[in-house]
Image (cartoon, rainbow, N blue to C red; front, side):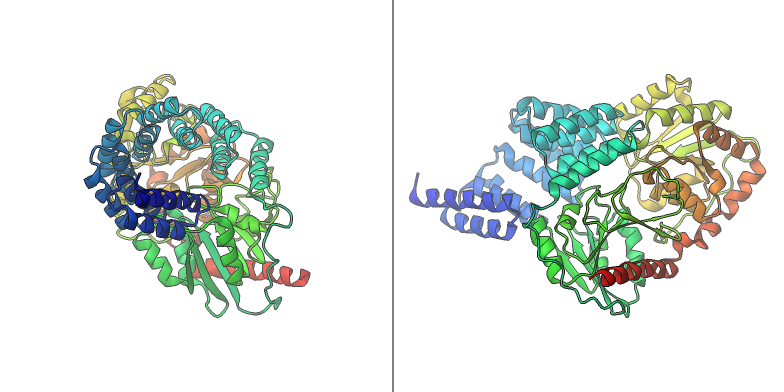
Length: 590
């Protein structure tokens, strides 16, 4: 080995250590120094591309991998990494082509098999994804990251109990943040998961991420003036084309800048047009993609944030562990699917429908009930509301456009009972391009068949459509049926906006009361059933009176548009009032 190559490899090893500590700028600098010493080493270019991809520099990452492919075109790792970059871009066709090439060139590579599995999973082809992820685990049995991906694939294929078991196995091997959060999410979807079991999993995660005594940040040194302008920070990995961003952007547009100064802390490997719009709406934009949780917390602390709002912490790539460092004076959970269980999370935003006074859900935070929890962004390019598709005597079309992971066996039981109660009715199912997967369609056909519903009564929307075309499908739908225990949110709002009433089953936790929260905001809480029999009866009764159903459809869009769900100025004032009350309490205790 030449002296220069040995030095380059030593620098690459140091870069690996920097990546492990999430010091991505340092890692990139070390790899560039290594490449000056050994510019013909494909592995170094591959390592550089990986770091650039982690940092969200996708164009630079692709150039590095392309350079590596010129030096070593038969090296499977290069194509596998290119597939991951294309996946981050959302270019699924290119991602699959590159990932398949990587898997073919390196048939014994667990990484190649996992990458192809991840690509297939993101395309909604969960059965095929599970096979590839299983192959990755055959090659590398105790690989936690592959187990985490497999748990997601199992959730999508109606194997929730197996998904929970895989999550627990992953957690036993390595008690990582991702493994613990995956378990919480899997339990959230599980119909028979009790309140205590879920809260225990949430609390176990919180205990793992809390810093050791004496190892945290200095206490926030914010000035305890109860009336001064507040610094409010929003923490999210969803500041992009995502339902959370599309809702929160209306708050950002309507914040009273005399009352609040707004910061955004964004983890965004692949920012998009909506990211840039959000950046333009805030006073301070902080990209935390390239730094670890402690560094991000230090940044928030040094910015003097009074109220830190953690958005949807349990889901996606969000980083609620940052809050464990207590970087802000007051910390608030918003748009999350359950309690953070963090002792340093002060409040959880909700409303009376989501958490009535008799709620049995367990949580560590103080509940702050807004007059209405949900605020949705107005939808551009709305197709017109059609007349009732069934008319006065035609067959009724029910529908669910929710994620298939939300369609649990108990919900299928209820849907089948509804179809039996409404003769000649049919059920339309769509979620992105999930039902383009023949295995997914067949699984639902068999599930309904076992419940007495023939295949010809099922309609599958198979294409990933632009939003206006997707919404136009509701012109074929008479009534939407919600999911349980995890209700729809954006999906239900879209149905209601298109004039389609939603029948929901209200449960005992936040995620199973989203439907009743939305309907209450519209004065339609009578469409929320309190038990299984009530759900079937409600859906059947709604279809029995066609005149009433047609009138409801005709007026539903106007009802939505004049409701609190789209009243961003009033909603934002309520939110600011809640922040001010929390701030006053902090000042009193300071």
